[in-house]
Image 1 (spheres, helix red, strand yellow):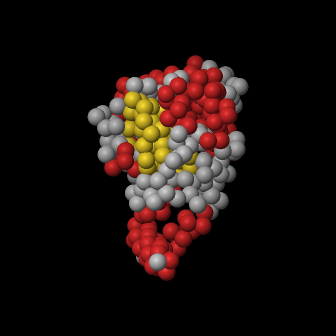
Image 2 (image 1 turned 120 degrees about the vertical axis):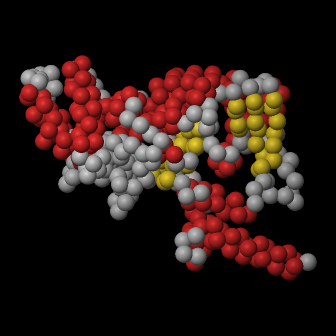
Image 3 (image 1 turned 60 degrees about the vertical axis):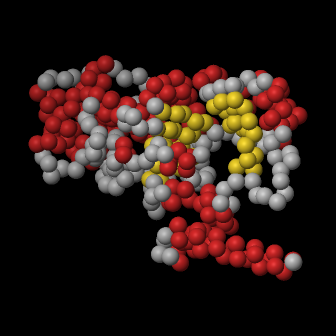
Length: 378
């Protein structure tokens, strides 16, 4: 489904845990954000790419990020601090215009604060109780060069996210990190809202895979609620994927936001839930006819063909079970089976890292092997 959307020109932002979309992302040269010790996750919220602009939305998103890094969850910020940060961001971008040799990033913003903005505050007689700039600089020092997280907000590549069609945020390695996870969460929100508001006439889609369970603990539920209520007004779609219906039920905000605002419901094989399907039927508002269709999925498949069935309900008006069969090449691009993923990468390496050629060669080899086995049996 994501591949189809992408080929129709949709901008897709994907939030995942488990590296399910690595193959597809490599296939279409999308942006793949993930974390490892050797190559930690990097962003640059200060960079203004082609087609983007320094509007109120951009300034607010930077301010939200800085406040989240500065204040703890239970700390409130004063109006004077909010104003001082607004002035600091405005002054910084004016400073960049006057010094075109400076690269926009957190490092140059931090240096502007301590070398220029501190004097502005003194000149304006801003008291420490109104904005403690020294405390702000101290708390955010880890994100400046030489600090523990100096890589996080100083990216020099993957900068123009507004015009990138497929962006995958893989959160597996940071979902329990107290600093990285909430920071990346805010950046994901900003990336999609920026696309939502600025890409007029272009369909955009945010797909939150199993990662949404982890996102709930950082107050992401309110963002989900906002998304599902407003995304359609901007020619967009919000999609949530889960393997456990209980996860949706356990969050009242998500339950109401997702179920009440989702006209399209897609269910895969529910065999393991057939003895407790009443709860699912009630939650999703399925009719008895739809229930029968869902429970018929994969029950009488044609043994001569390789496919899986899927139930799709469009607003409760049109409900059908469809066969989904992909080519061997597509299967290899999408597979999450570890041994198969390794095989695909091995074959890609034979062609200088070209994943398309690697998949093509592996698919040809598998087909030839299958044909030879068929001949032997005959």
